[in-house]
Length: 220
Ligand code: G3P
Image (tube, rainbow, N blue to C red):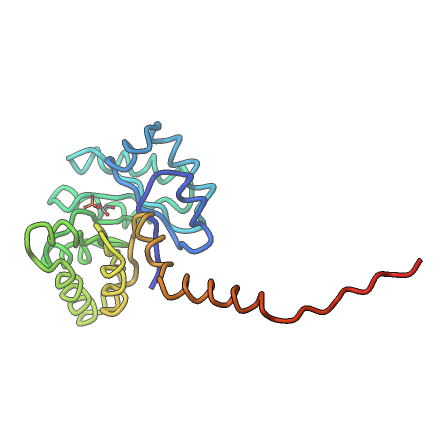
């Protein structure tokens, strides 16, 4: 499974660039960066060597298409994030014809994901954490989408989004999602295990008990 970083904070991206395969942003994450949209997206393109999702804000297909054309010119790795609406599906279909990659976002049901794939979305983003917030099991939605896409051989890749913890990432991988887009803090959490820390401390403690060879002084 590929791992994308779900952040627009470039310091965070630099720190995890060696283990990520791409990056996703959205208007809220751009706002959190406190920087201008184009500036931050351009900088991300210099850090991340993989697909970078940048979202449109238009609500009508024509506006989405215009924004997408401009965004796709920034860098070859740009993927245009389009919200899952009727207008969004029209835009995705047209952008597919123009060979502009899309990520259909704000997906909360299997039927929405089915329509996104039929429209030709390159990626689909089910938001599992926001479903969990409503008392649902968000990860079940990913399982449903995997089954539907496998049944019909859709090429749309599933980006599990709205991830809140390391267990979400593990579940996404076990189900066979293509990608998980993961907040910086959760990527860090994935690296950690208290037994790893304890093990390192014990190895170092024992290493200090090992007799060391005396370094010979070189004669002049
Ligand atoms: O990339 C969009 C998605 O991951 C948003 O997550 O935490 O705002 O539900 P969240």
